[in-house]
Amino acid sequence: MRVGFSKDIHVFKNGNFIILGGVKIPCDKSFIAHSDGDVVFHSLAEALLGSLALGDLGKYFPENDPKYDNYDSSLIVIKCYEMVKKLNYHISNIDISIELENIKLRNYIEEIRKNIANTLDINLDKVSVKAMTNEKQDSTGKGLSCISYCVVCVEEN
Ligand SMILES: [Zn+2]
Image (spheres, rainbow, N blue to C red):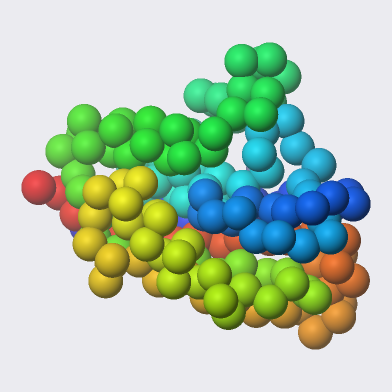
């Protein structure tokens, strides 16, 4: 059994929606990013790489590569899990904490969990997604950015 961890942050600009875990959340913001800025999928993908010491996301999906402009981040997650599966491991469980202020995720958490489970083709009970504020502190607390932390546990087949 092995454990991977990662964190991702993206900064907000004015907009109409953000995407977290592949789920569109209407709000007055959007992410400044080359891709869709999906911090949840990015942290999950990199945690998967971390679990088997495969390096970081930038190694496989360089930010300056125009191929990844507006790239669907679910594909990044799928590709990273394929690397894990190739090494004969499968996901035991995923735990994600999303840190952001002023945008209520309560009504979206279940949809995000389901979408992650569907994207990876794993059972829903293996996927935990939680939301928290940063008590008005730092960039997330001031509503300027969003962070996702992810721990993933993988088991050898
Ligand atoms: Zn990112």
